[in-house]
Image (cartoon, rainbow, N blue to C red; front, side, top):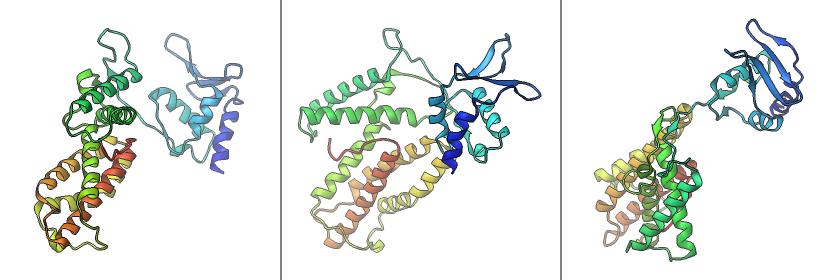
Length: 299
């Protein structure tokens, strides 16, 4: 029923003629499929430049509209509310800051495809130079480099506050060291390798009595926080909350690697530690997928 109402508005909004409020006259242009909101400061029409097909696509969403035309969407929401549609009050305009300095080193506009191509080439070169590279060179290596590069760019953007303006910087966008998407991928691959090569067997139950080391306790506490972090990320509509949680989680995991040995340990202790790392990998995997990353198993 809700979907039918949302579809209905696309045809209904184009039939509203000479609909007046105390300040503006709203008149749709049936020929251009643009909706005139009123007059600007210079006497020009203020319009929604949305064709009907685009409007249908926007209104098919349940809650968020991910665009930055604040005044336009405020007016649109006013139209929908005045039409007394039951779902109009649930719509929310999600605002974003601006990325400044989006020009190449030659001064032209930066395209996302150019950034991704450059970071892919950088990652491919680093993989060829690294003695720890696990994937075979060639087609698989190109795919891995592409995923690593995309991960770096995504996390570089999402770790910023949503409304914060920031300067685009090539060096920062192409960074592979520090708190980046590459760290998330590296830690996930390391956990996959541990599960595969540890020689231990996953237990059916957790025995917390043998997980008393500080590193183990910190991991358990952070695993327990995952659902809370997801809810906070959703409520605030801030991806950076989840990003920062995962980056800090990776730091804890990598510290635990140095202390919580599995090989050459008591079988029971080793299996419980493996369960802890296994649970950490599941949380990291799910968090990365929520952010749009494709977790690698080796790199």
